[in-house]
Image (cartoon, rainbow, N blue to C red; front, side):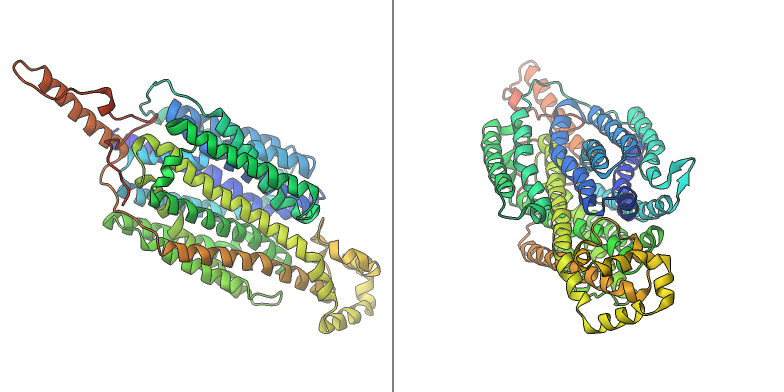
Length: 580
């Protein structure tokens, strides 16, 4: 490929990644408005995790199928499915429908998350890839800035062109998606092989059976009870599904959805494990902090979007800097260690926050988490790609993304389950605090407070104390107009409840930091996958030419000596291990 072709492909990939990443961040700051409008704040976790569960499950499927049928058709399918889900989501009438339509959106997002990095591995050498992946994460950072702002603007508008403002959160994807389809269709032309191969349908089915029940119980455990019949059934089905999945994958060999031989490489295995922990810490923070900003600090969605800027700036700065250093030196081992240490500091700040803490403390915690994430995401992907042969590039990249998304989905489920499980207790405790009770009593004796319609909902709850524990489950908007003295116990209770998810995030990141100390990272290779395959083909062609020359002799060239070219590109497949 010429440099111009590569540039146009990279631009198309960036647009598609922008589409995928902004779909997650734009929903974060608008979710409270959406949930209030559809009367289901306690169901909002399904909207988030339906998207994450489905996109997580299909990610390795995209990787494997793209190795077989080519990157381009799978990438186009992913974009179209994503846009279909966006259109349907804009018509949702309740939270259940919205969750189902977001799941369809997730069918496409799984491909948009993993295939760009795989295609980059086809056309760029690892050092160039490190530089460009830094820019890709910068695109993610820009979308993370624009997403909350756009979500806030749409959620803050009652109507735009006779349509509820929050519905444009999904409709605005359409023009971006149209550009992505055009770019991919016209410029993404990579070679593909047409070898007859097995498709691991059993592996795909068993992956669903093994993972989905465990994610469901992570979300619903607080409702069902962690030792309830439904929870135990999920444990059993999930364990059986995972066990059968491992058996099937071991028998499928190289045709497996996630080939188990990849995990024999210590670099790939450690990068995958760190990816799970990184995903947990990333999504737990990114989904929890907007709620703290809006409920505890009383921000509207637009203001909350602006307040996430420190995390995004930290991510952009760290990702571009680490990418440039990796591109120049070929070394990247220290970035996971430093990144996780900085993330742990960020979580350490978050666990100390109370409802009346200064806003700058929350912003500082976000900055540290962003600086840590920026050193982790691209580094772990590059390490996974550098550890495998070219024929496994697609499945290795998608597997890395799959496990990071699995960790992220688990992080969201655990964070919100802990939040709403603790909330009734923390609210009751806050209403028992002497200082807050004294202010509350003074407010209820104030005729102006009693006459203000903005206080009606809280006054109703105070007349029915049994409602206090669940007062924030379906609609928290009454806090926006309430007298500060009446709202204080609710804010304190909610803030206290968020410390449990933050403590779990701190523990997970700390464990990952300890593991990262033992991370082995061999130097990056010098050529792209396609370049290595072309060199090998030239060598084989020369051997054949020498063998056919009169009076000459050369060792016979067998088909096994010719490297397998993955659909959409190729690379090193010379039988030499890349492990340290």
